[in-house]
View 1 (cartoon, rainbow, N blue to C red):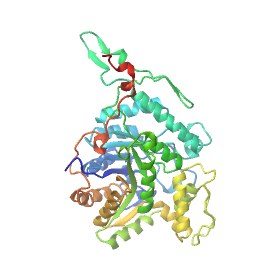
View 2 (view 1 turned 180 degrees about the horizontal axis):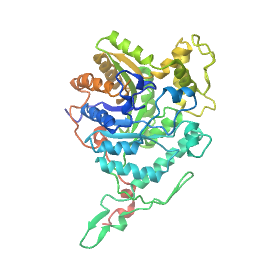
View 3 (view 1 turned 90 degrees about the vertical axis):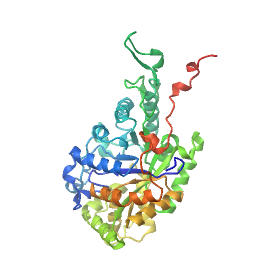
View 4 (view 1 turned 120 degrees about the vertical axis):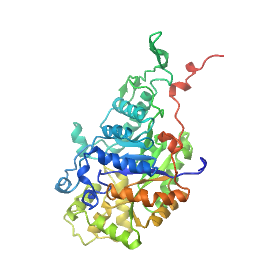
Length: 451
């Protein structure tokens, strides 16, 4: 297959370890009892690698959702720590990228720069970072705060956090380590750089005690579709996990984000936009519809209502289930995920749904149910229609739904020339067609030898 042929980027997404939606663990084919067994994750990621996915993406949160009783009683909140998990997975895979959600609000840049650099070294250049600012007061209370940082402030902090982290990854020039046993020189001190960063949120001297990562910088991913999120993405992200929706919505967001790149000196090819998609496969349309209904019915009404209440910041449990929600939730002053609130507002405005229908729809967002051919058609339409550079594929339950996708959809995409037959490189940057970023110090005048 020609290197010039545009190829789909595919992520295998794990939001809850048992699958994408909150009740995935209840699916008859889910293997939820394996959530703290390494073999469970190993099997899933090796399957994704067999399907020639660019990356495995492990979403993470820093709290147990106990705002409502149902969150503890009925939903899964057991999550392995991402760096431990991805480092172990690096040892049992050889090509697939390894990405995780890491919060810029409840971490410090030095820690994260060091951990990601180590993962990139140990994996041979396959690390990626989904940059999030976190969303909830529940997380804040686990880190000595009562309230979550305000939306704009946490994005401002995130931008500085990424700047500092990249600066730390540049601490060592590529050829700084000498290992010269004869002379006793371990490193060339002139090729080590202190960052000496002093900003509004961070003061970091440096240097990092891990040499420059194989990819230069691990791949940077961002998922916010709010105004602040889109600006951060245009300035710093290399992959954007987009929310999905209709083809027209996908095209509009794609054009919006790509259109912001030029002011940061970037070209459209410098960033991949990967909408989320949860395919539900059936051998026939009828079977796919039945499987979708099965997935929707796994979430108890109480849990679905509480999840909707969480997303819009208003308790809806006192309203009649079989009537429309009598108000439109306000964006003003809202301090969780603004892009998710916006998508729920649009659902309420554009469709005539009862409260329980809205709540159930929220639990199965980003769904497309159909035959393998129909799912491949959907992916191709977005990919060729200016709405996506690839997809972040989520699964209604694991590992079975991933097995089905790799067995039934991947071969169709490969036959159509949309997806690689084999990996052509070994690093995640190579899979995505990105070049290795140059160190900031390689560009400074003092590193140029005078003529």
